[in-house]
Length: 201
Image (cartoon, rainbow, N blue to C red; front, side, top):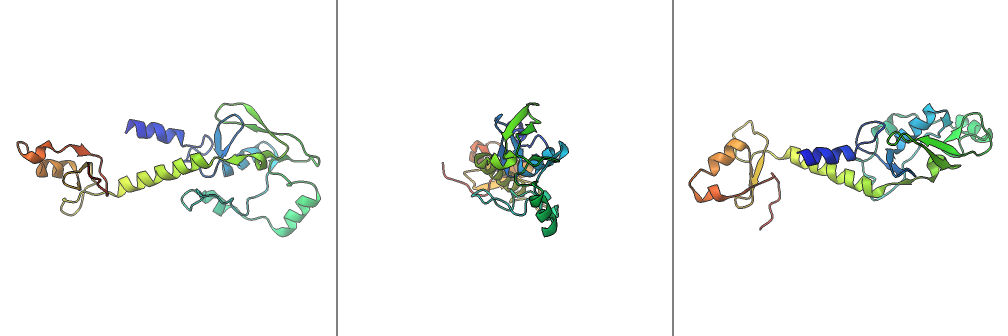
């Protein structure tokens, strides 16, 4: 449990305190959600174009997409036209009130340093696909573990806490003791984490 909690902390965005959604790799080697990065720049006076679509990648699944993107209103065409004509919004992270490109500085919430993103701002950052896949697999592991119930409980079923490779079943604590009585051969069975797929030893 402790190792899982430690791992989960590594998969949490320092801005929204939730698991990463489309993480961007910063030059300082830290990561931040794509939407969170835009929010941070907006708070510091930069103009960020609203994302109308999400970049595609092998890890871009509904589970990894941020629900905050769906809640954001798409800018009206006339507003976008005004922004482009005025010189704003060409790159995500252009300072309000400026027409010429400038270097974008991003305040990293993890290391508390101002990170230089160059003239392109967020547009010059890459999605951390490796981290995104790790988050996706971790989510799947948590969901599977939460769904495993004891196969021997009478209704209502309790959540399984142990598995048995020899029995090819998952048990709650009480049922594991009941079906592995002391002094029998089954008492020698070693408990494993609960699972739905048992592999032979």
